[in-house]
Length: 389
Image 1 (cartoon, one colour):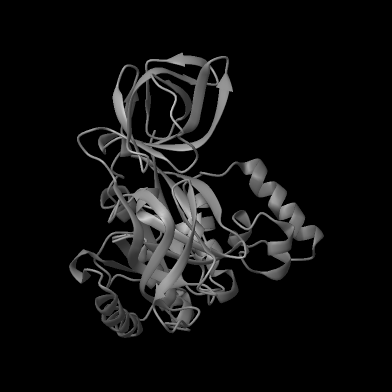
Image 2 (tube, one colour):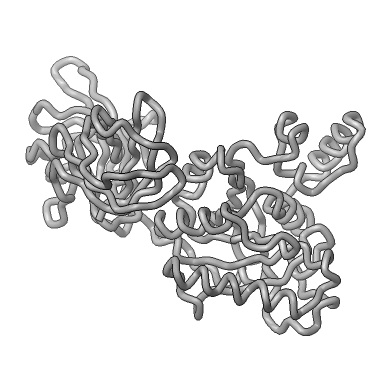
């Protein structure tokens, strides 16, 4: 069964991990033995069992009461399954949040009704929009703390609507849920304590409204070369089919080298294949041995990626760059580049960017695959993540 990836975003301590824990517990998506194990660890630490500990499985995270890294768990629904991605809400862990959110089909923004909208609330929304996550729902959490008042919920959602509108989210397609993750109100079933709320429960929304991801198999072929090695007189290119389907005897074009070849054989760890689909890691032999190496992109002939030594788009700055000797990563390509725009950069903000590369690369602008994303590194450290327009 296909798993739909959904990322939970929001400020620290607003209840993302607790919400996931409640979903796991009430849908019986987690084994009783695992629950028992966590309760025993909490007891030995002299602490009360908390739902968040079902997600924060590392001892260090329980000790510090925060999610330190991206965690992925399986949520079992009645109709389909979901991969829930819990990401850090702390500003110093924003790079982990970027990694976790990339590839998610939908997002749940969790907001504590007692604390309201915080800087990381807005920052996570901006990053989700930048990464192309269009399906968004807002979970207004900890309603039990305000005795399930409708007025306070409406005041909070009105402020959130203003922010969402500025960022560019469609308000008519955005759902708002009053929830108490701790008490389980309006999570799996509609709450009897909030009879004023007429919409679905959060789980009902996931089951009926969240769209299934578009299969990358239906997109044009993109084969990302990771490495190559020799076997006798044959040259084996090793890589991943990022999108589309690759077949033996198929003629493909490698860019930026602009070399057209025919596929002679496809293999994986199990042996020979007739074809390979999106997501598969494979090795291929070609009709001719060209100087094709890591970073090259193999594509179908009728729909090819763009090739250029200039990239531009929107980017989120984790740290300030040195401008020269930056390393630009797109797909499997790693090329040095010089930042031309913007002239002024402030860490934690989003901006337009323009980069001049040392040599051309192949990429797919405005694309959901990895070829539509850019990672900037400075001295080996990720300093920015953005899209390519």
